[in-house]
Image 1 (cartoon, chains in turn purple, red):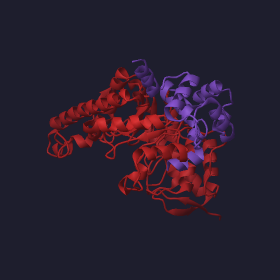
Image 2: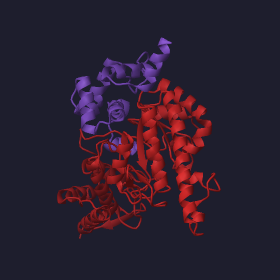
Image 3: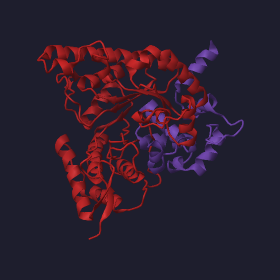
Image 4: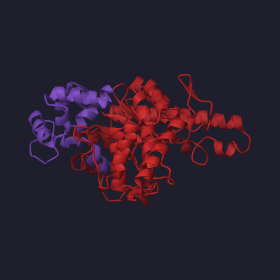
Length: 104
Length: 354
């Protein structure tokens, strides 16, 4: 079922910018248009580019956001999320937790 | 006269003429409008739905640029759970399932959950769930949610500590039945808040209070109160509230939240309560009628959800799974039906996600 929705109407998750737009909905209660506009502005792409794998693959690699392919050395997990929090200027709970522990 | 293949509400193919499909679309929309006290779909929206069903392609999709984000319910269970949870029962670990959802299935968010999928069951093993959340957060990039249900039914005898209202009411013990629901609601609220604060302290991105209201208005009230308390204690924890049905059953009948009676609320009113509780994303549900066609069910669901979207100030992720949101009641749903409901929700109801 989720794969069907992803193919028919989904942004594509880490293939594109779906995870980033979802973060704006959960951290800022942004509706879809506002969330796309915010992320597009931060990434310096158009809102339509956010669902385009050809554009977003390069953008994600450049910004260190992590991609779906297994690329050695490419940021993954916490490393990618720390970059996402910085570029989108949002708080990501596990990144904040890591910062607190890092200072302790 | 030409006929077109569409699905019945139970998933079987049936043949209908274009006039019959249009009639069902209008009747489905009017049924929602009548029950919910909301406007029916407009003529151009009926025309768009008709185009979707007359298109005999196996799969349809939204226009480029109209894509929305997705959340889930059941999360990783769809792979390792058995068919009772519409799962595949594959022998694979929970963290691996999250990786598959994120890296292979193109999901915008990922969700972890306990196999029982009820907060009551999670409470005694929350330390175990915290460990899974912490492991998952290290190696995943997408927003990680934790999902479970308030599931108030588990708090009543013989499964829980409170007398069962379904036994008390037929015996004429109305006061006792009301009191049992009020006590169970508070107990569920405590369990949800306990689990939520512990998981938030592990770094979780968001909680999914899934299938809220399944045991009626006391169940919905437990979700609302828990969301409000969690937001006060852990404001950075995102909260999604997904509903159990289109209509809040008045199993108690007198419960209210912020001065409004919960029993009888439809999605466009439910979302106002969710917003007042601090919920970040709301998931309306519209049930499928197996005796009507998919065009009737999709039009009806879209009409309800469109009113909810218009009433909302927070993102709306419509539930469009087996037996809800216009999808046939079948645990192996057909792509032709799912894709039409998906497009209709995005391009007519204007949801923010699914």
